[in-house]
Image (cartoon, rainbow, N blue to C red):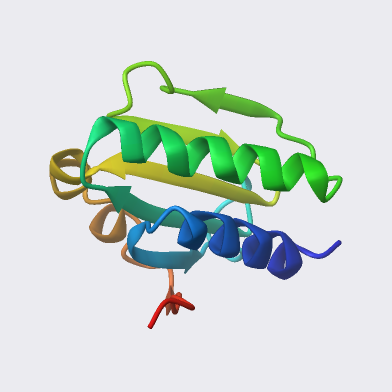
Length: 117
């Protein structure tokens, strides 16, 4: 499975739980950590946890190893390391505070489209 395939699995799982403002940063040429950072947010702690849980479960169902999951209980910033893709699920206020899009400003932003109407 390619990193783009893994990203697609992550996007679909997050979309199932109505993740907001989904996007991915293509960090292939600027990071040794991953190929993509997926970023989204939820509007409350339960939604943030639901998004992370769905990503984890769908990844495992597709044979994608979840190397690390951090921040689940606090539900302010949950990081899921899937190897070539790292998913960042934020509580709305935390996303604007940490602003990963600006921090990794050299990375091309790839807008992720929701399948929701």
